[in-house]
Length: 373
Image (tube, rainbow, N blue to C red; front, side, top):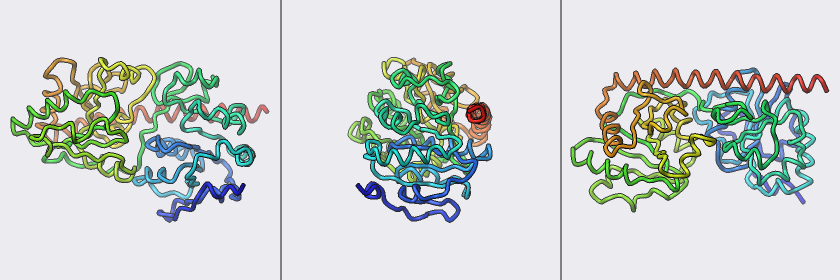
């Protein structure tokens, strides 16, 4: 079977970042001192610029195998010839033994291979491609209990986005590129991601009250789930909500650049939300760190993400707490807003340095294992 039918070319949109189709990957020269990032899914590309940045800062060349929507997450990234994209557009490959065999030989040429999303459904691919046994593999667990399903327990080569377990290193990829800091908008713009099984009733009722009190604000809703949509909004406040679901990363990041605050709608009363304190990281926090957008976050989750009254706005479970948080955000002066951003940057920079140090620990471990063998 001709492997090239699984992939298609993508024109280079940046003359300093090379973009190829996957067929060219089999014939390309693997540069010395290179790391490969591998993402087979159509999601988690908010992580790819951040992971790339750590490797680039440590002096490595970076190749990325990803679906064609992935390169859009690099719209703010600094152009560099040390970075190359190889684009795929079909997931059938990970059951194709001929294809996997070719990849297995190429994987050996890389200093390290980062599997950006470790999921149990790809155990066949991990085994056949020798990633599980390979001494240069690194695995990212976006929900760390999945470690037990896959039976890979090398702490130094297992990463989680936050420090949820002693079985893995914390690496948080919140870098998106050169972000232009904006003054606070005259009409305060809040951002939330529509996520299934969340309770949005509180946000709707608070928005209704703020509207009746003549506060000027907008709530921008994005996401890949229609759990929260325009049909749920009362007619008198429909103009306060702007829904932009199913956006490309390009459009999503441009919207995020333009907003003022991120509302993280986690609530410990929702059973599923508690995993965001124990083993799963909300992407909204990464966006907050990377774009320096202060959050409105429930006190029950704030400490997990390093958020406090200096870099965020904290609300609790009382009836009116979200109301006062949103009102504080709307009434905040530009000077007060810049102080929040400054403190948030200190938090983000601290997380970045911890993560970079842990990436270096992993690379040194791989180099030592390679030298011993």
